[in-house]
Amino acid sequence: MATLLVASTLTAPSLTAAAPSDTDARSTDNLDPALLAEMRRQNMLEPAVHGIWDEHLKTPQSGFAGVAFEGKGLSVYWKGELTPGMSAAIARAREWGTVTVKPAAYSDAELQAAGRKIMAASLRHSDHDIQSIGFEPDGSGLEVARGPQTVHPDSVGTSRATGPLTPAAQILQEAAVEVPVTVVDGSEPMELMVSRSDDSPPWNGGGQWESRRGLELRGKCTTRFGVRASGRTFVLSAGHCGTPPDYAYQGSFGQSGFAEMGPVHSDDWRSDLLLIDASGWYKIFDGSANTTTTKVVNSWGYWSANQLACQSGRTSGTVCGLKQIRSENFHVNCSKPDSDGDCNYWIEGVIRADQVDGATAARGGDSGGPVFTLNGSGVRAKGITVGGTGSSMWFQDWADVIRVFGAYPRTG
Image (cartoon, rainbow, N blue to C red; front, side, top):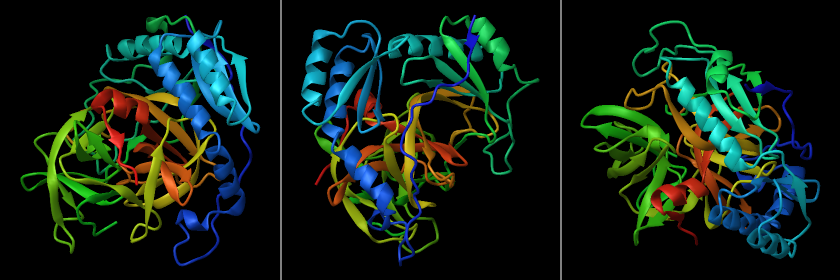
């Protein structure tokens, strides 16, 4: 039986993300100085984060629970004795700054196994009120969020639920997980962000695109990063925006700049990722929704709790001050299905980030857009926008992109 606890919190500096008034205040060139300084400081520790994650991915069943920016350094949460490989990785990481090993009650592998039990129990019901399962990066347990189920007028199809929602308490009882679970209530429903105007090939990240099947509009989303896989380039975006045999088009039908990009090459619904068969570039748009300013993708990196990031979407433009919180599994309920009308399934391994000032983190149409941190005069690719609600958004990270497609971002 799950034990209900008060949620644990990993601390981070209190920052203001407001940008000064300018011709394009949304550009990262106009970030609040305090926010910019903290992002630059965190960037100095990126090689340490990268090395720790690389070692974890070699032995995913080890005692690793998570890595977090805490104080002026990094904390690695670990259950039991460090493996020789992780000991060596942490020693190398300390060349870049302070790295502290802290004890974890549960490993990430143990929490993921418990999460899979909850997902399996939930899918035995036609619908339920669980909207996400979170995996605490300090290894303390799970956070299960109940969400208000709202039928939206722009939903694709109607709710497929045939009766009342099965409550989270019943799902947890059936799952019988043996790790602590905190149950919280969400104030707004999580949504896939389906809803940069005039790009040309090779395609930049952060541009608007439509998926169509013949004349049927399937989704409006944002291109993420140009990636390399299997010896060629593609454009990466969100899986719920389209599926083969859909075709991708730049811009909006009937408007100037509308152009064919290429077919949707492949998609993976479990991780919410897709590849467009089109030439992807190593730049992303940075600024307002109509900006022509681009930044070079200098590098890429894994996610880390408390790190500050930005997202660049076709609707929102660039939004910064997004503090990464935890890895979560995201339930697609039938009030807001994907582009195929599919629902009542789980997207796994997405990262939750909260906007530090409570501003809106992502809007409809931002799905598939690039999530990034700063690296010199350019950016470091971090992930791809999946969904959002209010001041929270969810993105898929590079570990899953590499696992699913063997794809790495193009860099300049």
